Structure formats: structure tokens, C-alpha cells
Length: 318
Image (cartoon, rainbow, N blue to C red; front, side):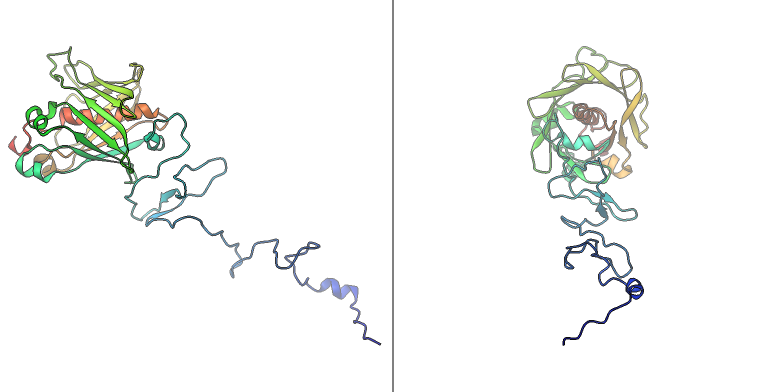
């Protein structure tokens, strides 16, 4: 006769721990856990991150409920870690922006841009005027655009800072997303009927805004106009410009409220005296229309040519 299993009293059976406390459901296999495994310290293990590793000085931004994060497909959104060096690559392009000209999606995610003009050694040592080149960055130091002047050598040498120009603004993929055009006009206050004007196109050939100089005896004044030629913002410069400090051009709405600024930054005696390479900053509201933001960026380049380009091709000769 086969041995019968020993009966365990009910009281002792209730005191014994279950063989598999994590899988009490009927019909659930032991190989399929219902609860996540834990590390030796007893804390739940974080899920493995997907995508490329974060660059030095950055960490992934957590996805918040109801707040989509817009990045390029397959690229994780990053945010700087305090105390670490910031990345200097290209800014990832936001996705899913409706009714936005191609290439201007970058402007929807910024309220400040930094524009650095490259130092040309040939211009610094010989006085030969070269085509201006600029790098446009965000506050994290990431590149947003790069710009290059499209003029002839004869135009640069004969007309100086008053020259007509075309500036091509391109993105990381070398696509021309903005085109700035300035015709040859007088900029003297004695000729109020023929003042400076700059057209901003995006894409090239489609005018989205203009920058028009207003006649004024005391200070620089510019109107920012939309594609319907209606004034939406006004830029007013200082009456006096201190040569050894930052120079601010304030931006106002039609009711006189200051909402931004264009700042020419002091770069030091050596660079200011020997070259035409300047640094600028521009601030505008985050929710401002991207076409108006692009037109303000065009106004920055016009201000640079009108007030901070050397008239004798070399600052050291002044």
C-alpha cells in the first residue's frame, strides 16, 4: 500500500509562507511574473532607456503626461546637467509644427538667439573687405542656423557698409530657409524719402516680412512689418552709443509695451578695434509668430551693417 502524504494541521499550513508569493493568481505560470523584479536594495529597477546615449553634460528629459516633447525621429530630447559642460552641436528640429514655413520650426522653441560673426583674418590684417559669415545659436550653445553674405568683391570694396546685399540663412542640412535682401539706399537723415529697407523671405521668393527704417533725427527707429505690410513691432535704438559696453535696441508693440530687444555685445578692445566681427543677442516672446521672429532676425543683420560695420574696411585705420 502506497504511503499517504502526511497531513499538516490547518493552523501550521496558514503560518507557512506561500511558495511563490509573487504569483498567487490561479493559472498564472511561475515564469511570467506579475510584479517587476527588484534590485538587491529592494527598489524597483528603472526601465532600460532607448535611443542613443546622452551627450556629455546632458541627460534625457522625462516624458510628462499631456506634454509631448518634439524632437527629430529617433533623437532623445536633452536638458543640461548643472555644473557640466553644455553641448555645442546642432539643435534638434521640433516636429509637428502646423502652418510653419520649412526650416522655421527651430524658432518655435526659442525666445532668445545669439549671433556670432566670424573673424576674418584677411580682413583684419589687410583691410580687404570679405563676405560676412555668421553663426546663430540658442542659449545652450547649440547651432540653429548659419548665414553667409552673397555679394561681389567690387560691391564690398566700393560701397562699404552701405552696400546692397543678399544673406542666405541655412540650417544643418544646408537648406536655405531664410533669404534677406537689402537694396542700395541712402541712410542719411537728410533723405527721409529713401530710407533703408530689408525684405525677409521664407522660403526664398516668398516674402514673410520687411524691416523699414523710420525717419528720426535723434535715434534709430525701425518698423517690423508682416507679410500684409502692417506694422506689428517697432525697434528703437539708443540716442548715444557707448563704445565700451553693450548697446541695446529695444523692441516695442504698437501700444508701447517693451517685449524684446536686440543687443550688440561688447567683445573686447582687440576684436572691436581690429575687426568688424560683432556678437549680437536677440530676445522675443516665446509665443510670437515665427514669421515675425524671422523678420526680427533680419532686423539684427540690418542693424549690424548700418551701425557696426567699418566704413573704411579696417577699424585700425580710424
